Amino acid sequence: MRDGIRGWGGRGLAAVLAGLVIVGMAVAQQPKPPGRARVRNQGGAPLKKARPEAADPLNPANARAVEKAAEKSAAGTYHFTFRLRSFDGTPLAASYYPSKLATGAAVVMLVHEGGRARKDFEDPVSDLKGKGLAEHLQQEGYAVLSLDLRGQGQNARRELTQGDRQQLAEDLQAAYIFLLDRHNRGDLNIAKLGVLGVGEGANLAAAWAYQPGAAVSTDGRASDLNGLILISPMPAGYGYALKSLVPSLAPRVPLALLAGAKDAPSKDTVEAVRGVVERVRLNRIELFPSSLHGYKLLRLEPKVSEAITRFLENSVKLRPTEWEPRYNLIPVTVSEIVTVRHKEPEKKPEAEKKAAEKKDDAEKKDDAEKKDDAEKKDRP
Image 1 (cartoon, rainbow, N blue to C red):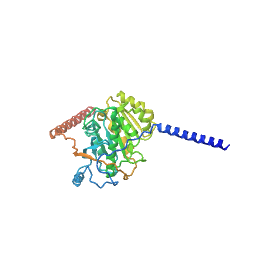
Image 2: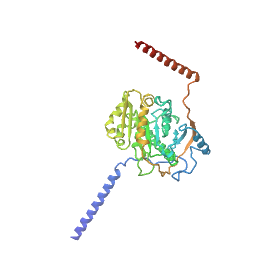
Image 3: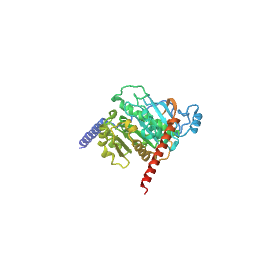
Image 4: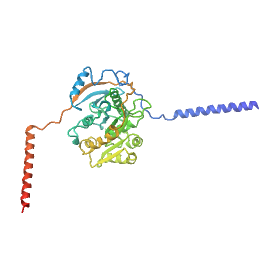
């Protein structure tokens, strides 16, 4: 009897062990949850303190001279251009517009459309009195970062493939790490981060925001992204289908989708996700009576810039978040730094100005004479 019990016990134990092995094998075969690739060195020395004591790369040896020049100049009269390294060592041309509000400043990252460059955000916008979107946002108190995506703009030009799409998303994370460094130097408040993407760049920005760890400074912390503007998004820009991304983004990141009502590809893309987007009160969809697409819609269509500013103000700028230092050991380096002073819009020549004033006086005089003639006719 005892031998029988021992026999059953042995067989039972063997069965349990076999079951555990099978379960272990099944678990091992399950696909791992998606996650961001291990963040690699961008070059430079690690930051050992929350607010670095090392020389500021955007204010080299003559840092104090630069500071004095900035103090004498009006707010929003300059920006920096430089090259920022992505995690795989690829240099990316970028522009950074500092804010006078320092730790009180919200920040906006600008992502251009496919085949174009960050210069689109420098070109004058019809509604902004001759200023580009980047400079306008700077004057509104934002710190602004724009970059040329790899293979485009002032970077080494090459044809992009499907294999580049993950690296493109990592480039945006590298840009975020640069902004995190500026946050720790007291330039801005990274917790007030907004991102604007145009055309295929809108899909890329959405894909980056969708990935675990996007705009996250340390493990376990919530994303700093608090506003995402997608202008003329495409059905599958850079291989990222917007309809697959938005259902996850809409409940957790304030979204604004802007497109021309006569721009069929973008309009249909926006309409396909309208139901999901508009379930959340802060989200916005705006269609404009235009066939313009991408940067042309941004630059030439009235009220687009107003919609952008309004959304950023409500979702990012007025967010009640105090500045606090962030733990950051990811090295950040920039090179080829140039300070660019902004020029005031050209004033009309004196002769042209006098001619315009003379014309105005003549028109006023003519109007007065017509009024007098009308009053004389009305007299009995």
